[in-house]
Amino acid sequence: AAIASREGLVPRGVYEQKIADLKQTLMDDDCFLPWNVREVPELSKSAKLTASEGDPEPLRNGIDRPVGDEDNGWTGSIDSWVEYTFDEPQELSQARFIFETNLDHRWRSMRCAYPLDAKPIRVHPGMVKAFRIETMGGDGQWQVAAKVENNYQRLARVPLDVETTAIRFVPEATWGAEQVHVFAWDVR
Image (cartoon, rainbow, N blue to C red):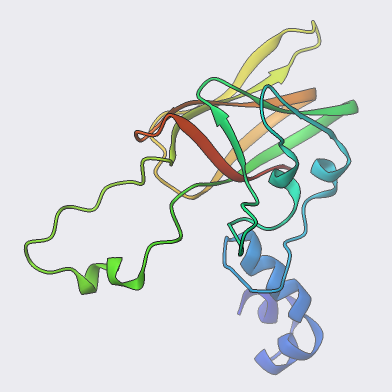
């Protein structure tokens, strides 16, 4: 509806003229569209991506969940880090994350299928609970740009208002797991 309104189209017009925009909008909101890949922002694609441990490249492959035998995520320890470095200072307005929530659960875990004596639903232990975002200051020192303390969302968007040559994601806690598992991290 938003695309139709913005573009002055009827719903069929969105299908005929703006279906690619619709797919990207849905995937950016963490909808799964099989056989489609989310477009990763150019800023994230062109930056140098490094991590204190593990391979961070799956964070920007545009597939924000396990598919078949492919994990499509980065795994690290608490207090490890993943960093984007830019050739020149960049103005950043948002960091977008997709965290682990165990999408392999069966449909029976839906609240409507629970018996009356069911155990309470808990946040998945692998979900990142607390994290910080650091940016490189003009003096070459890392400074905290944002801190999240009680996250329970798979899709987390963190507003930023910084200009920097490097940005770092540092997970500080999960809801119980020893390892952190992240499917996407983009900067815009």
